[in-house]
Image (cartoon, rainbow, N blue to C red):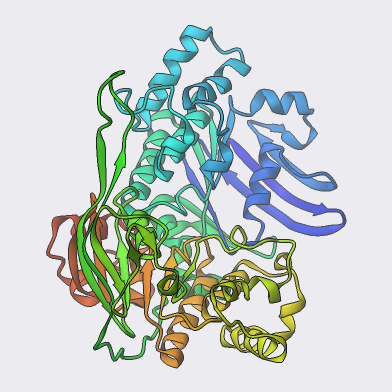
Length: 538
């Protein structure tokens, strides 16, 4: 018998149809996946299940949990269920956690709200579940705050909150999207272990088919609010009866076609760069210990070269990138762009910094929603001593939007009028508009659906061919790095442990850490072309 049985669920919000006759069943001890692009209805199905739909929602059908229809339950009944019998792990842990409360207080809150035990017992349970998710007391006391943790560690806290009362159903909404491959593997192993040990049912929401193929017992493919294909995961991915399933699968394996780079003269040179941070004092009058985030890093990027930077959270990628961009001072070494120092006497060289641009992971969060696209993409003009004006400015805007596959008329729109992929195109247009010498792509495609990601990668390949782009591509997705780079830098504990051409790194890694990263990455099965499901997807 199914623990959760969604029958013919339809949902409309303020009259707009969102879900159409959705039917999903999950038994205890089973992992069921919902996959599809953004806007397909995956998260709304989860929100309907847990009773967190927005105002103006109208539902028909049934959501049976242990035989009881959740759609007819009162809000107070649902509050009793949430956290105790049904829990949810949200996609972005930093927004799911209260920044002014300690991690211990937030996990205990779930326990105490339901009156499951006394304060002392709740504290003991909190410590136990944090240990269970890999946050031991010697390194992660209950007094830690969310901002003191990495992304993977914060996600573990969110999972600890969700499993504190050992729920019978756990809903995980994109729980590993922004995590590096080793942390992702640990989180997925943790979720699978919880299902096995506690006989818990897991609804897994993700757009990553490689994760689905490794995790899920059953798979539901969603498109435009409907389930277009469902069944055992192996059977669905092997047969792919619906064209949309095939499109998702092909997009997951998509490889951008890079033109041959004519990389000869060095553009960016990083020589023996180190960066230290002061840690809290361990005693009242003791000196502050130092933490070395970047340790004597050296490498060059030639003009026209496409270089990838990979490594786990906390390895020093972000610190190194900020130093290159002139945003983070360095204690040792030198960084030059086209022969000119990025740092002079401890201060950023603005004449050099204006030759670099960044494309961030979250395009919506990096834009001011009150401004129109024309203003947003011309923000880099403030770096120029003589920015274009009038007709020249309009022409620059039109050229930048056209280069990224958008219409010049889009300049008059606000950012909320665009999809996630279109926003990322606008972010790339903003980076291109002053024709920088170097662009840094910081996890620029990690939050995108597989089909949108394929489009953005093709766009980068086209721009590389047409404009001779030089870029540093930072990502935890190794398949993307292989597709879009000529050379890969592998970073661990503040040091570059491998620096070789991309094919050599993936086909014959020299450093054990590189092999660890490759082995940790989820693999797409190889069918239907071959039944050898063990063939790597790289």
